Image (cartoon, rainbow, N blue to C red; front, side, top):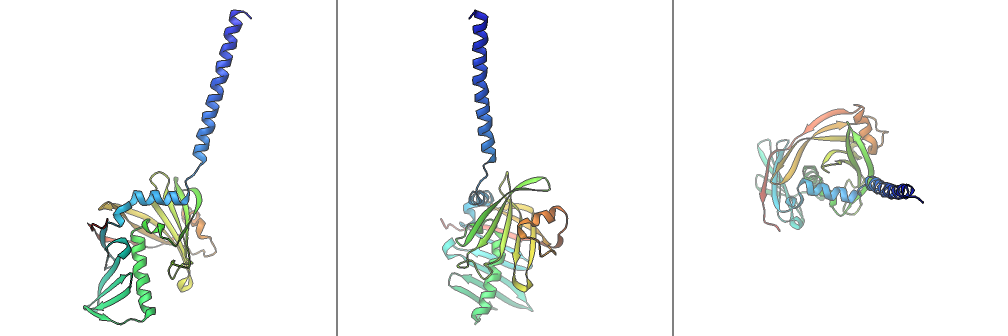
Length: 263
């Protein structure tokens, strides 16, 4: 083999080596792109991006539809309150781990278990939505990753949430779906299917994001789906088509976050 042929042979071998290296890097990169996070990883990242430990180390208060709400105390002894005036009468409901108590003009009143349960569920519901995504790591929550989708050209991780009967509350059979921004992991949309009062489906879009005391709070545009035969897991398709009816806007006001030293 002459010198020229030897040089050509060496160049070919070097080129072949680089070819396989580049091919291996491309395959590795493609595999890395294909691998999606799990539902649990998405929710953990979302909670961290939205407030993290601030949810449990602070006292939080806000107003919703002219009712004052607050959450106070350490996470295992959290006290949820609501207070409002009706017909010149001040009503205060206090939900603690031991149950619910109602005071009318500072005087405690006796409630039946069924009525107390209705009031407690109502308080829980408002606080649950106000602090999302924090509650999505409760023990009774089951999470399922539904893949990556696009809503109005933005990519989202879609996660289904269901609940165990034990610890899942009175409406444990409701199904929720959340759409987390694929870059920030903040929840932008949510939907749920409920069964009380004839049942139905709702779809909510977050807006007016603000951070108070390190916690992300949002308001919602609340949409109704009239097509009850449509699966809640794909209600985003109807939203993209403009087929949902705007019912209302859900707004939090007078938000306050005060350090509670509950480490």
